[in-house]
Image 1 (cartoon, rainbow, N blue to C red):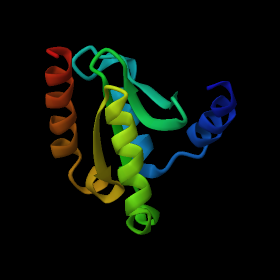
Image 2: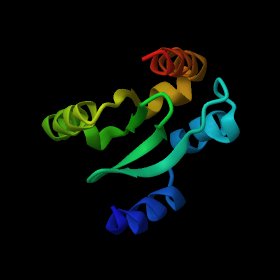
Image 3: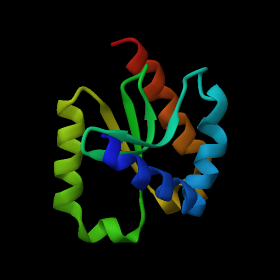
Image 4: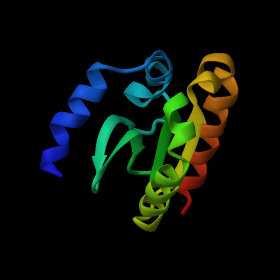
Length: 115
């Protein structure tokens, strides 16, 4: 896991507009009081947004993910096998339907805490 820390730091510095927008709403326990981490190592992966207490990972996908469908599916399966619920949004969903994305995440946090 230690080897992923520099990768996570670089990804955190080079965030997309969608990541920056979503992070404004998830940081500092603004979402149902849940603590989210941005670009956090989880096993062999770096999760875009991680909430350990709700066992939730939120992934944002840009255009490059449209060509990596099988790789993303394997990654999601591995994270789910590790006990996390993984929800994915396209970057343009965050930018054009921020309220809907936030409500979906809020419901996932509430559901994840009740597991």
